[in-house]
Image 1: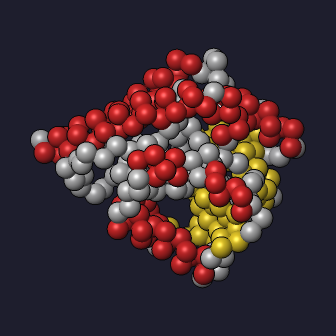
Image 2: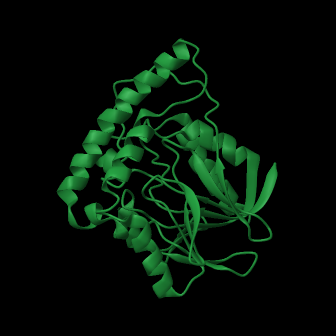
Length: 265
C-alpha cells in the first residue's frame, strides 16, 4: 500500500448508479494516509429524494472503509456540498470520528495553508437559479443513462479503455459558458481574501492543479466521470491522481443517475 500524508476526494455521489464505487475502492486499497478530506457531494441526497436510493454493495463498502479509517487514527474531515447540504445542519459536530465542517484550513507538510471548500457557493447557477440547477440535473441524468449503454456496448465489442460521453459533454459545455460563470476566478478571489496559499475544492467535476499568481487552485474532480483524487505527499507536494476504471461495466439498468453540475460542469 502507498502511504501519503493526505487524500482529498470529492463528488463521489453515493446513492446513484453513476458512482464509480468499485474504482474508488481499488484506490482506497492502494493508498493510505494520515488525513482524509471529503470535499463535498459524497452522498447524492438530491437523487435519493427525487428518484429513490440506489445503493450497491460497493457503495456500502466505501462507507464502511471510510468509517474504519476514522476509527483507526486517520483524521477524517467532511465538508458537505450542495448535494448533501442537509448535513450542513451538523457542522461543528462529529459522527464516527468524522468531523463535519463548513470549510477547513489545512496546513500542508511544507507549511503552506490551504482553504478547503466544496465550492457550490461560487456557482451562480446553484446559488441564484435553482430552477436551472434542477433542469441541468435532469438533462445530465439523461446523458449519464445513455453513457451507461455506450460503455456496455464498448465492452461488448472489446473496445479498450473507458470513454465518458457525460464527461465529454460537460467539458464542452463548460468551455462554452466559462465567460459567464467563472467559477475558478471566484474561488481564487475568495482565497486571496482569506489570505491563504491555496484552495482545494470540488463541485464542478473538473480536476486540476494550477498556480495563479502564487495561489494554488486545486480541484479534486469526481468519482463519476473522471475518477480523480488529490494526494499530498509528506513534503507537502500536491499531486493529481487519475485512477483508471479497471472493473467490468455491467449491462445498464433503467435507473437514471443524478449528478448535477449546472452549466459550469
